[in-house]
Length: 131
Image (cartoon, rainbow, N blue to C red):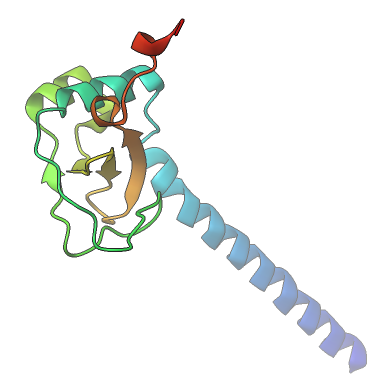
């Protein structure tokens, strides 16, 4: 009888562990496959292409980070066609342009998938070299 209880308990632990591992794998898969990370050249193209787009302010005290849900007070926009043509990886993403960065947002989850620094507002060090 004790051996049967021990075997049953062991089976439950193994099955629970397998289920948890499968769930973690499934949780990671959509975010890894849905939208890849942009390389620096692609980020630069996105930033330059959106430089004339008006920016909005983040809610007071908010510091949006990758993985956060976009605050309700911020309005995410569809990626313009010219940006999507230059950077096909960003085609399906939404964006929110802040004064100092651009939030790229997964349209399905409304989570911030990437943050692109906007060189037009943060300044470039290229002109300051040698000073």
